[in-house]
Each structure stands twice: as C-alpha cells, then as structure tokens.
Image (cartoon, rainbow, N blue to C red; front, side):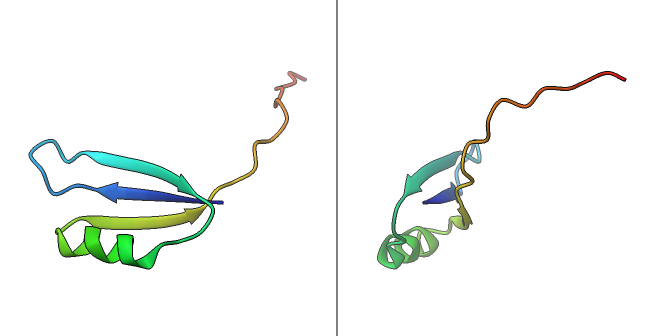
Length: 55
C-alpha cells in the first residue's frame, strides 16, 4: 500500500492524499505535467495503541 501526496499549484496550495495498492505512473506523470509536486511513500501499517508510561 502506498500513499500519494499531490501538492497542487493553486492559490491555496491544496494537498490531495490518495492511498493505492499499485503505483500508476501515468497518473503521476499527469500531475507532474500540471505543475504539481508528487510525493510517494509506503503506507505504514497501523500499530496497536501506544501507551505512555510515567516512571
């Protein structure tokens, strides 16, 4: 599982986040051609609840 972060080149500098199983490089290319920045990162598995222990 991967996370895409598309940083739009608009007035608000919008960010679109998308989770996918496979990378579609045609889609990545389309976003780059529109002047957007693209970041791809592996989706981390959810960890069990973390508890802080005071000592």
